[in-house]
Length: 613
Ligand SMILES: *[C@@H]1O[C@H](CO)[C@@H](O)[C@H](O)[C@H]1NC(C)=O
Ligand SMILES: *[C@@H]1O[C@H](CO)[C@@H](O)[C@H](O)[C@H]1NC(C)=O
Ligand SMILES: *[C@@H]1O[C@H](CO)[C@@H](O)[C@H](O)[C@H]1NC(C)=O
Ligand SMILES: *[C@@H]1O[C@H](CO)[C@@H](O)[C@H](O)[C@H]1NC(C)=O
Ligand SMILES: *[C@@H]1O[C@H](CO)[C@@H](O)[C@H](O)[C@H]1NC(C)=O
Image 1 (cartoon, protein in one colour):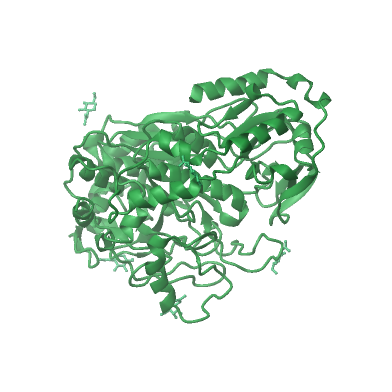
Image 2 (cartoon, helix red, strand yellow; image 1 turned 45 degrees about the vertical axis):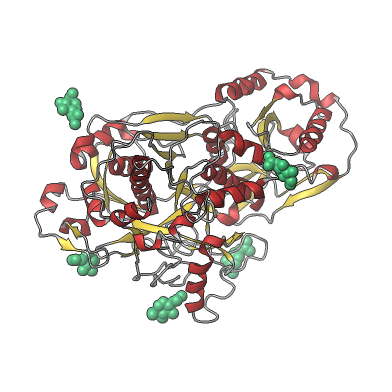
């Protein structure tokens, strides 16, 4: 599938003249504005976009998505008779396929602009059409003018517009066209790195008597209160001595922003913390972003030690260290800003989740537990696009994949962990103060992981565990009771107008997130962020899948309906701490679910009984 798609793209690239597309008169349909956004905060409009090619992604409606969602909830609900009856790739594709009428009308429109079937790449379900065209043609098709926009603080540049139009008869047949109005700045969630004393080895830290954790009741090495290792997590989360043994299990990590996971660092980490995993590695996939550069370049895997990515190293070392010997995969997806206008071949892209989704949805056996430690401020991802990316995650859930995302490191604010530079204003032209939820953390079809620290565990406060309420997605049924209870206990009027009390609330769960000892560029470092908690939780989920598979049961798939029902008793409730942001103290960790640490941190020993009962 994939290689076919890439051949298609190469074909377009080599077809430089584009068949004299401009000579074909477009049929005269009146254009009507499809989407319009206020000029985004922090971005300044520069020159009109120079001539270059742009890769447009057109999303056709998925009229049966509500049926897919119904299936997703049924097969993920442990009390439903269909629990575990996951859908096949083909069944899912049928449920997200557009109406033939939409396909035909979009084809007709593309043809009037000289674009033929073999110029297109279609997703397997035909719900996405991707094409590479000169920007002047895109401007004509969308009745818009693209500009170079610069992000003042970072200097990043992108080619975008604040409004685009479509012929009015296509409004019901095209849901979204990007890149147009998307000003997201995709960020990793590993915020804090520090360098431990050279003399501080894991062994020397373990010479103190153990701590008995008052929350979980487990015995933990004293060193774990200052440095987190694989052993610490096994002790704290009650997984000591568990050895995965089933067939058919798998775990995956996604990497973006040109990061790769260094194998030599992984071996140093294993030698330090997981000697029985020495010499084991992971499968590497370079995901070639269709929306990216002038040629389809893949994600990086340069194994130069000094170039290793901290985020990728953290994710891989802890997720795979916890779940060894479950087969592991690392995906490096290319594609992101900046657009470099001075260079002849500018880069220009959307956020790349959809590139990864194209790839992973085309695989027949995606990993069963996958963690991603990246996110955007929800408001910088246009709602129409966020919905489609979220719908992509639902498709994976329906097929039996558990998806973990970090909740962000900026508390209730944007993803900036520094309160001094945090910006908490709406992007909608009103410029009012508001808490800023993260996406995909706010997608109801994923499991969002917040952060804790110390023993006994409290909500992390060196940076703050991202948490809050989506402005896009309504609250799903599975969390109505838990979140309702939390809100009912909030004093009336608390933070009124700063958050959407009817939104999808997150995080769902939490895990340790600070002072993780990893190996980076050949030396040990301590690193923190909800970037650490998400792969740690994904590692535990991989172990739980092992328990299910060994018991001849289906993998867990989309976790939340289970976690919020009979899963609750398998979590250590975190009740201390809060998640400051936007000049406030944020929300409090409380008894029961809260928008700081969710349901709490996992007790594997309890969960492994619950998931097979
Ligand atoms: C999609 O929904 C329509 C009705 O809304 C139904 O007739 C059709 O069978 C559904 N298709 C699939 C593949 O479930
Ligand atoms: C762990 O460290 C925290 C913060 O320094 C401290 O408050 C707590 O008492 C320590 N826990 C134990 C068991 O010593
Ligand atoms: C890893 O490989 C080395 C060299 O081949 C070998 O000596 C060592 O026993 C291996 N370790 C494990 C845990 O397999
Ligand atoms: C939004 O409001 C804040 C605070 O009043 C102000 O500092 C900022 O410049 C405003 N931004 C825009 C784009 O108007
Ligand atoms: C958090 O707890 C503190 C101390 O009990 C209280 O003063 C504050 O109002 C609480 N904040 C919220 C948002 O619940």
